[in-house]
Amino acid sequence: MDGDNKNTNNNLKTILDDSLDLSLNQIRRLLSNMSPSEIAHALESSPPKQRNILFSLLKTEEEGDVLFELGEEIQQDLISNISNEELAEAVKELELDEIVDILQKLPEERMKKILSNMSKVDRSRIEMGLTFPENTAGGLLNTDVISVRPNNSIQEVISYLRDLGKLPDNTDKIFVVNDSNEYLGELNISKVITSNPSMVVREIMETEISPMSVDLDDKEVAILFERNDWISSSVIDKNNKLIGRITIDDVVDVIREDADQNLLGMAGVAEDTFAPPGRAAKSRVLWLSLNLITAFIAASTINIFQDIIDKFVYLAILMPIVASMGGVAATQTLTIVLRGLTLEQINSSNIKWLFKRELAVSILNGIVLSVLVGFITYAWFQEMTIALLISFALIINLVSSVFAGILVPLILRKFKQDPAISGSVVVTTVTDVIGFLSFLGLATIYLYN
Image (cartoon, rainbow, N blue to C red; front, side):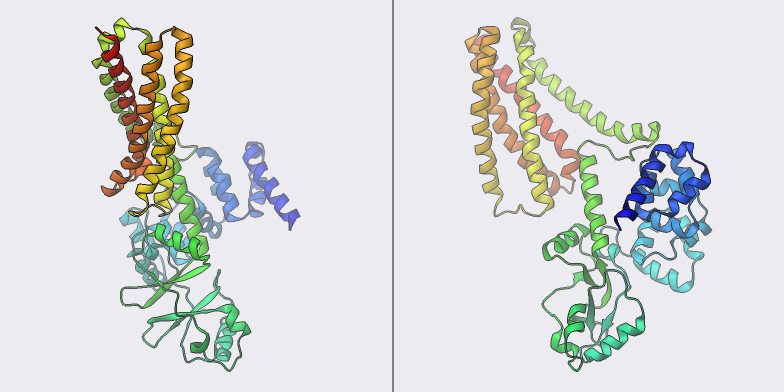
């Protein structure tokens, strides 16, 4: 096994480092020894031209698995270069949720054409999956569900499973329903194996585990899986009928995508690593424009104190220190709050405690840093008044960073905005403005005559 992993890693490294020096047949042979996820990694790690060549070397039956493993932007780029017939053939062996994940990002007209190339059975189950919103339990579910009745004997269940020949991936349990397909409970495969064959399902099934509603948010799904260490879970509709199941592999994808979006969103970036310059510039310009607006807000604050800055030039040298320290402190608090909101650790019962904790932290750090900054400022300019002013301004801004770091994400979430995307620029603007106001305002009061 270790030898196989080593060979695969060597194949991946060879493709990424030396693909331009290899023949197409050599690359094709390397790709044939790699898993879909490894091929997807190779594609994501390649510039567009090289990526298209690598994808063209895949067999049609391999393309679907690889497409599902790719990020949305690269996935859609590659799909745009293949025909409807080829795409229909590529995805037909995928699980329902995987097919839906790929097709629902396509233009509606093209999606309909692809569905028309599929069999009636496949088309009908995919259309059912497409009715559920992407970011819900319905968008993650598979229909490969094994269900039994509560009055079946364990022997009957075992015989049924044997007749299936192969169980769906990640099958750790089967589900118990009544004659109307209403969910009643679940039955662990381990209990089926270890229980007396003469017992009936009702005697050993679990009824305390609640199924997931089809409209449950996918982030809620991920949290439930993490808290309960689930491998799979049932999904029901509003009538309590079993319609599918969600498995851990799909939940891992949700967690990874959410983390990726949060990381890129905080910097205002939403692009593939090797996106063309035009597309990359387009995806960033809005965020940069927003930052430009906030920069003018901060600049206008400074302009209010132009006279005092003209008279005491060293204020212009020192004021970025106050703003910068406040911005960093606010970002630290913001990160803690964003993490707590994502993990659903923050609620109305503990937000006050968190606020008091962050306030205490900012005061302690403010005292330590203000003494340090004050000492350095006095040593630099030999002005005790300036040293005291910047020390007090620093404490004020660090305290304000707590209000910004906690209140901004909560307010943004209340207005249905993602705090991970716009939170950082807002809190930085707040601390910049307050930093300049506090330092230059105090300087105006005590220095300007």
